[in-house]
Length: 613
Image (cartoon, rainbow, N blue to C red; front, side):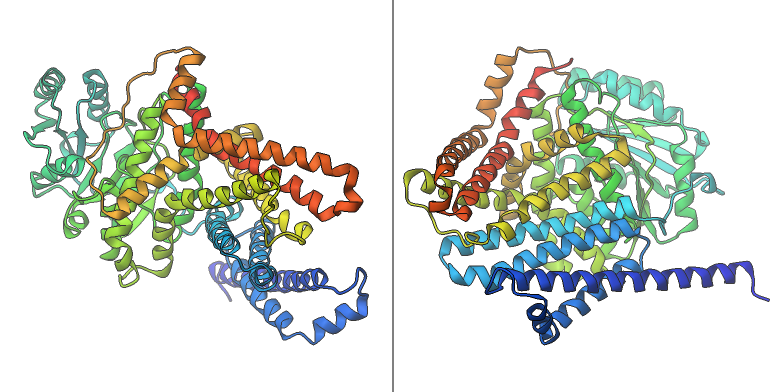
């Protein structure tokens, strides 16, 4: 007689086989549809007839190849734990993007192979490839029915209570903020003889340092205070100094930034993971913020931050490919030492160190429960400083490790995730190229020397595909953020605006990082924003975002001008041609859209300067 576990396993295998069959069928069907649509786009007459379609499908090897490839892809997706809706959504996106690229490359581009069109095609190719890559994480998060690496803190009560040392790096932090953080750490629901606190204070402000040192002396039986005269290596250097002084019996290192108030159950609920998995090198929990409702701007950047922790990290966790995020995480001391300690030559020492640990074979784990809350930047300049450091550090990591990743011991999925995580900082280059070409096309329309666009003549098929991809992406973000934090469409669009607002600045930072430029560690300002007038806020924003303001202005002017030309063409629709008029309207739409992409910078900079509600 079969055991219940065996029967359950057999049912699971049958269900998985069924999902694979459904996935293959859907993939093959979509492949057939794409072939027929492509066929119709090249039809010699308006109504070629069913016989013509049938003959050119049955006798076309490409149709079978497309159906087999997409069927295999559907089976691969179906073998996982995605819902049918999620599978169809991602497959549809893949097919539309691939069809768009292939048709552009093989049919339309050869008709107009100018340098400008080739450059536009390459930019579109890279941009749409990014869409496919990052859509995977979102769809995986919202459509996965079960998780292999699920979280259950109730089953993680430690057996032996390993010794943990909190490392709290700081630099010129407000003393009252630091003392609150330390007070929370002193009240952990964990045996007091099994954990200690180390304050790695690199402060240069004497008064601030003296107040914190006095507090530590009052609790010297629980808190160790250390101060370096020279800030070699910045935050990573301070953490390495604390690691070198760590006693022999310390097994785990918990890193907490100096503004994070940690919940008392933190250690008790996470150290058990290290006990049950000897290969676990580090564990990360989400970052959260207790001042997120300070202003509309802080709420919006909080939502943007939550997308990473609620969508990207769970999907990467399934593949054992998360990164360490600098705070609210725990490292196995042996793994950290084996990796050579914290990387002092990059600004993102947390992500870079976790990459080296993964390369040595240590595993990672993401625990999606908020155990502590810190301070989110309350001004746009503070947010900009934080994002600059992350992007610059991401570029440095690609420069240092990019060529090594393919020769490392990492799994293919880990390599993919690590490269995708670094490359997204460079998306601003692609957006700038596309927007610049569109601007040239718009100015050409206005001044009477229209530039030949390889999409012209296929506007019904080609011109609206990017629009579909854009709308699909926004709906997908709404799906993910709605499930994670209950956002509606308006709030989702605000989050998209936040990402646009920082895109070109972070791209510039990443380019500097990958080029080998030197940059000192810049601490993210946590001071409270004061209320300022709308005029002062906009003045600051314009000064801060001159490049974005200039691009947005020219794109908006060009978009308006092309729209006026399209309106003037309407009375002569038959004479000038329907395609030409539709093309003008589509071009004006994209010019205005990219004007918003660039204009989001000054808009959010102004919002971030207004201060509290």
